[in-house]
Image 1 (cartoon, rainbow, N blue to C red):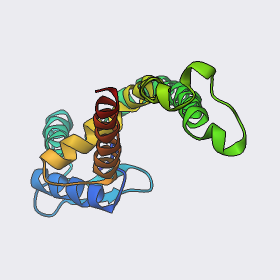
Image 2 (cartoon, rainbow, N blue to C red):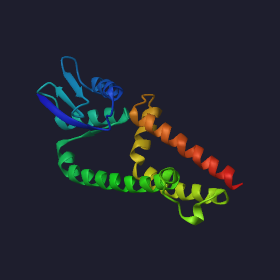
Image 3 (cartoon, one colour):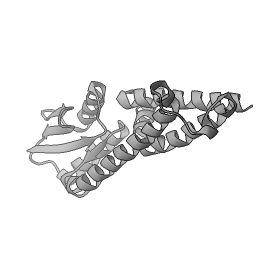
Length: 184
């Protein structure tokens, strides 16, 4: 019997290897699995006598333990439109807040002036605080990268989300430390 499921959270070849290991723990001898990064899915050939619901539960648990999520057909149809809309909203809001940060931090380089209460060396702490206030929503809107990246690091299977989480997290922490050093 052929089964096909979507895998949520795969972003790179390392993810595929982790999912394959998890799937291979569940399937029996003589059964096969093919994990595809391009389609974010896993295709299985299993014994016809297998209990599909029990198999899905075991497979879902193994994939979740690896740091990913198995999407069944029932879940897929229900969540697809909602998730797509949420990601578009998140993208638009992230771009708007990021443009605000870019305007404040780099606008003077192309001839745009910052508001007077944020200009000058005496207002450097205010300028940094304004940039931080505009950065926090972007971090919150894109928290899924931090959650997925931290989960992958915890499972000792880093992926692209781990790279994003570590890089962005380090920049944020450095910025906050610099802000406090400036303020005090």
